[in-house]
Structure formats: C-alpha cells, structure tokens
Length: 277
Image 1 (cartoon, rainbow, N blue to C red):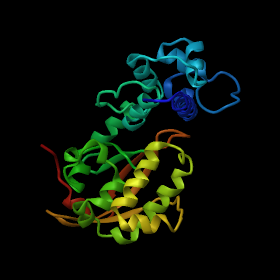
Image 2: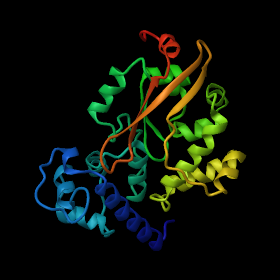
Image 3: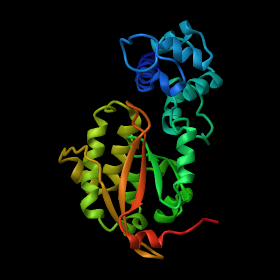
C-alpha cells in the first residue's frame, strides 16, 4: 500500500518533471507566436494548458503537486503537448499514479519533418535518440546496418544497452573498444541534468549489474561531451563500411538528436543497398 509520504513525494516529482519538459520546448516548435520578453525558457503554464485543452488553474495545481487526479485522456494530451518520448510518456503516468498506459506507437518527440527525413535519406542509415541513448526512431538503412531493430524488445531499444550487451552489435562495430569508453563518458556527462530521474538511475543500475566493463568505466567518473564523428562497421553481407556522422538537434534546448550516417568513402557508398523491399 502506498503511503501518504510516498504519494506526496511522487506528486513533487511530477511537478518537477513537467516543469523540466515545459522548459525545453520553444513557442516556435508548437506554432505559437513570440510575444515579448520571457523570464523563463520554454513554454508558459498557460500555453501548455491551452495546447493540451485543460484549465490553466488545474494545470498549475498539477505542477504544484496538489492532490488532484488526471484522467488517461488528459495525461495523453499533456504528453503530446510536451512532445514526450515513449519512455517519458510512461514515466508521466507513473508519477501521476495512473494505470500503466498502453504502448505508445507514435513517438511525440519526433516531428513529421523528422519522419520524412528518416525515409528521404535512405539508403543512408539514420537514427533518432534522446540523451539517455534510447532509440526513438530509425529508418530501413539503420536496420540494414545494425540488424533487425524491430525484433529488439521496446525496453531494450537503447544504443548503450545494445552496444554493451548484444554480441551481434559488438561484432559489427569494428571500433567498439575505442568508442565505448567515449560513449559511456558522454552518457555520464548527460546524466548530470537527469541525476534524480528513475529511468536514468535504473539504466545505470542494470548496466553495472550486467556489464563489468560498464561498471569499471562508470567508476572512473570520466566525462566527455564530444560526439564521435566517424565509425567503422563489419557488415555480415558486404564487409567493411566507414561512415561519417552528422548530429542534428531538433531545437535549441532539445536533447533529441538525429544522427545521419554518411559514407566516408566511395567503397562504402557502393555497398549500400539501392532500394528496400
């Protein structure tokens, strides 16, 4: 049975979570005109309430951790307004004390323009990730490069999990030994903004338990925010592939990145499939 203290703490976490997600979205991203100076970054409470179709006072109380209940429909509207990814969507419902939502088929964090990019850039591999390394979207070029991503359970669609715990991914990544320490250092740097979030803490706990290498590197406390620019792969059908990376951010404060894999040489370009069935 949940205690009153636990409920109060969870409501406080809910308010902090909503404020952090509201702060990362600009008015331009949701089609609102800029109106004068803003004292704080991101959307105002009244703007979130308007876009989600709820009362301003009610939404303010929700952020303040008041004792109010939110229906599944209202939480879904708030999730869409704040462009939460599937992991954040589930976290919202947990904090609100609502029954676990059905699996989200569409990722609110990915815009229509991003979805078009995924298709238009084929056969180049493209992946969309959040700061926690969760795979939010990918195209057929990416599944050709890394294997059947659709077959990976939703909760395991995380590039850090796959790099460390999936032998097939490790076999394909020729520069695995040199890049993994940098990836973990980058993940630690990103976690500074999410140190209290259960989803981040549970991922670290899992990786420390299942990957001795992660535990060793994590305990070094190395940080590195510099993204990796080139990678080499050993594809089971065509052999050596070399790619240059380009990272595109979906907004000024967004942690969503679109990573494009551009052939680094003519040999790699020639090996890419011309079309997909």
